[in-house]
Image (cartoon, rainbow, N blue to C red; front, side, top):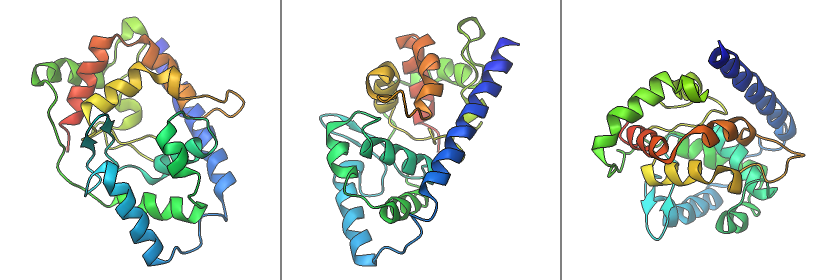
Length: 216
């Protein structure tokens, strides 16, 4: 019963955040972006996130953007702009993006569908699948699929996890409170994930990350 209540609370809270964000952006992201400007920005994004937005492993794992939910991408870029999410590189990238460009970029990446990069330890996949589908009742962790979908493709403000780089997912979950929710006065969906990330052990995080990284 605790998990059911937690799941409903998570979904209600995220719906509130999504409605608030939509109202904030209403009327600001509808103007068309000139094709030349959009193409130039997409080319810039490719230098870190891969030619098809599939992610890239360099000095640090760069996340997959391909197939990501547009609402989630806009929310996170806005969080960088407002310094609610910490990332020195993305601070500089995001703050020059207009609301119209945020919308155009998120729409572009949603339509990309490259194969996952893979590379995660396959021996962790079975444990990760179990956690994703069943959660961890003893730690009050609900099934990941209850918010991110059984196919891990997300919906609206719930992000897609399918095909995401395992090392990126692990790094974000293990450092959640150090990066997300940096302005408590302006909470976003980081507030929803924080207790879940906190209750997962490092081994459990790596298992879930391995599982979702192989999903198409």
